[in-house]
Amino acid sequence: RTNPLIVIVPALILFLVLLAIAIGLAPHYTNDFRNIAKVTSTEQSYGPDPQQVVTVTLPATGDGKTVIWLHGGGWASGGRGSLQAEAAAWAANGWVSLNVSYRLGVNQDDGRKILADVATVLAKYRTASYVDPARIVVYGESAGGHLATWLGSKQGAQVKAIIALSPVSSVSGAITAGQAPGAPDNVRNLGARAQSFFGYSVGTTAAHRYLDRVPHALIA
Image (cartoon, rainbow, N blue to C red; front, side, top):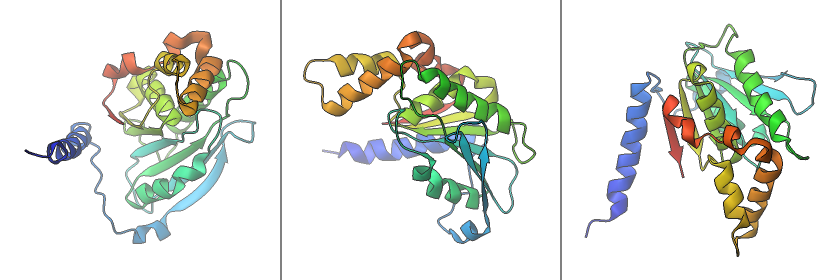
């Protein structure tokens, strides 16, 4: 019998390549990282809170194509440092990398400020001289994947594509899974955070129902 992975893995790779070609953003990516030494990184604040910081990494040469990076951590932990090596590698291949830290959730309804932060970053940097506003991709992992899908689907006209790795794309799904009898601690804790931070408006803070508005790749 044919190993299903032999079929699934090439199909997934082909899908991602076709997605990149379809949106006109297929990067000329290479494993030669010598250009990393030529990128420049600066820390920039986009708000008064110490957590509202973006690491802006610019390529030595580029045409304005940009990726916004959103880290994971259940909306309550983590930071942009976990993605900076990858952000720098993309910059070495001609991309403007905007690696974002946002205000982490602590209290009830803190999802409002988290969503406001990622929306602020998009609005602020799409007007930067080094960014092509017509070619902005948003990448996120886990909880950052939720923020990426939310941002891209709500601001579809301003986002060219979404790449989400293991995203929490359904807030209500996370809440339901966390409340299920026998749920593992990590699932229960994520569900409790989803309820606390986004329970004020589960429908408008979810994104999976809006994803048809923008090209996207969701990777489990």
